[in-house]
Image 1 (cartoon, rainbow over the protein chains, first blue to last red):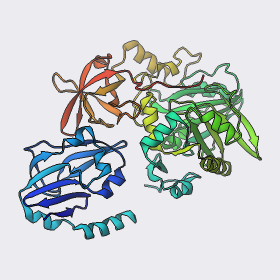
Image 2: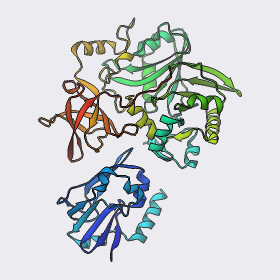
Image 3: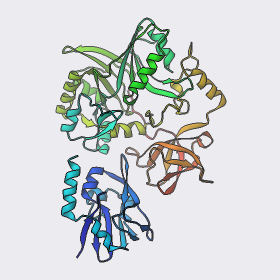
Image 4: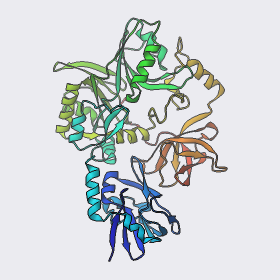
Length: 126
Length: 367
């Protein structure tokens, strides 16, 4: 049974056992517009919660990707290399990296779907 | 920071659901439907931009022509009324104060159009350098709106939707007419590499023309996002990216707009003659990056052999009309030959790139 958590910087991590699938939320892909490039770490790289691990680029600008959890990258989504727009088509299905969680307690710092939706509603009101 | 100003069409942009963002001191529409869609609308059909943020200035008086020639790199001597010139105002050291269009309305009457972000700086510069000239300099920016109607169908949209016949206008010429009690200036100019027109009018007339264009369904509303991708692909400079106070037009590859042998010269002329005689130390070039990675403004350009920094990217995109990662960059002249192999740094990684021409897409002006 998997569960999805969200960060305040609009990344999600869907956790299944000790594996987390990390991507950007549907709210984030809509705000970005057409994704033209995804800069991803490679298999074996370590990512650290709260730190930048790559970028998603729209036509206009690059947005840093901030890791919601720490751990080793076990896979990056190579489909995104030639087809970055998959993120616009379905951001939740098209994760960016698959991470082996080194500290599952970090998930407590993230929001569940309900809290995240409420967070986005206040962001949109600005 | 002062609040951003709003153009006369601001509420219309918000009502259309535009993504708004600060640009040049104004809260401007970046995109409506999307940058790619709007870019393609201009390349293939017709799009309209609110460019009311641009600054407009009136320079009149017995010494107007002599004064304009003194502060402007291009040469207006003996030009016919109705002609438009592109060029720059320079500092004494050759750095660029701004790039601008100058419309010649009459021997004693000129109409410079300047960049929004530079309005205060330019007017201060123009007034400071007007001593000894019998001219009157008036800032019209706060009372004048401007629309840019751009694309291969622009002429038909101007005639059929706005009722403004303009087929007789050639590239870089303009005419003035009164319509429904409003004075309009219409020029065959633009910043997209496509055929098109720019219309200057008061706020009310600008709003009415915008509404008619929207109601017609024949002209997509276009934001500054695609204005930048369109101008970039055809190698047109943007002040703040390719041009700056410490960049000369020769370095930016704009020498054809700089008349170094102009009678009486112009401010900055001596510095540019010297720069030309000594040879340029850096040049603006195009780069094609051999990866999907996108080099943005400020990305370092390096020598792949030893990694030392040879310049920086001024503008970069994943091209829209050209499906490649491309950029313009100001680099050490020793590396500026077409075909030279360099590298660009994007975040943690370095990617190989080749020096190319600055134009990535062919202009389709109607001359």
